[in-house]
Amino acid sequence: MGHLLLIGNSQRRNAVISEDCLWLCRYPTGFYVGNYRLSVLIRAYLSLGSLGQKDISPDREFSNSVPGMEWRGYLYSAVLLALLATILPVSLIGGLIGKTQIDKKMLVRWADRMPLNNQNCVVSKVADACEDVAIHYATNTAFLACGYGKERALWHPGAGMRSAKLRSERSFRESLFKYDIRSGETVELIVVGLDGDFVTHGIDIFQLPNDENKVRFLGGLLPRKDDCTIIHVLTPTLKIHIFAVRHAREGESVSIFEHELGSNVVRLIRDVKHPGIRTANGVAAFYVTNDHYSLSGPLRHLEEWIGPFDWSTDVQNCDASQEVVQCRQVTPRFPGANGLAVSDGRLFVGDARNGTVTIYRLGTGQPATFERQIVLGAAADNLKVVPTTGDVIATVFPNIENLALSLRNTEKLGKEMLVPSAALRLRKDRNFEPELFYSDDGGVLSHMTAMAVDPYNEVAIGGSVLQTGGFAVCRLSKATVRALT
Image 1 (cartoon, rainbow, N blue to C red):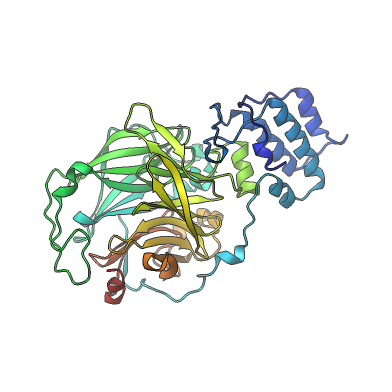
Image 2: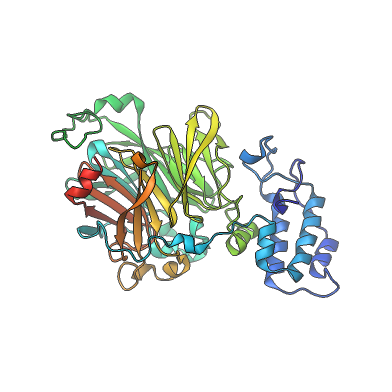
């Protein structure tokens, strides 16, 4: 039978369920089945017909939609699941529809470790709830995607929070910040040309090719430990593009901004929408992860209640250079695709469910080719590349994540309530074997979701998706910096 959600090869149609079918679902064995498990399964199947109307890709593994089936298939599967729900445990039902079995003991390898690289950290009070950070090394500038932790506990697609009416209207416009690593100044960027909601998540920066030669380093683009002092010669018109995941009540997208370095303004170039961008999380220009299969509705409830499923999440590669946006799935699916990074012809995908980073080789116009999978020993969030070594810094949750508890206590995070934080260094010279890079009990940042390292300025910058005082700058020791150059 395989995965029940993948039955059939026909073009998808809307599922039309008659009242007779509903009666059968309510009374599958001649008596009323009034339990939550059954109702969720039935409602999930009733919603499947609206998941997408696109033709099914001939390549099932890399399709943007779950392969479809005729409405009779929905009806028969719904009745079958209804019957199964009366006699089988949830765990067995989950297995039938592709639930990923995860050994939680494999996700606590870095729990209760001694503090590391957290002794000289300063938490910023200017910006809150900074889920992600990206550094423009040539100008000593960090860019952060920040917001309102307390309001995210009411409505945030990534966290499965859907009480939009309870969230204040003003809070649907979150912010991008820049942080000057040399001066320590933090400035909220003025967003020009963007209307409507802007709830942030992942962020990445892209140096425009026409300007890449306008910055010169004394000693080379990527200085090594014996190089002399770095001198930046910056053209005033040097520009970058900022890619920012945008959650909005009207749907998901990735906003592309143009930013003139040295200014305090970002201008919207394009808000990229596509059916393949369903539940955006991480972005690396222009790859994007979907962290769930469905944004809302019964199927999303099914994911959160029984999941994770091995078909839930994926990586899309998008081309927004033409009027019509093209996105395609370039990797197999994951139970919990989250952070990602691109470096040296490789795509790195962190999984927040099974605690892995999967590495792919990238080819022009081709699906990514699997290279290896790294077992981290902790659930992964954002990934960042160290420019001097090509190492990857993976921010992880050293203990089993209790997101619900953090959401209920956003104002206490980092204060009365501490959630341990950690980041791993995946060493390129050791086939990306993980080693501990940062460890803290949560007194600096609780529920940390990102950490980027600047070996030139000898700092690491971390961000927390929920904490008030949303990012921290940690001065690294000389020994740590030497190991990164």
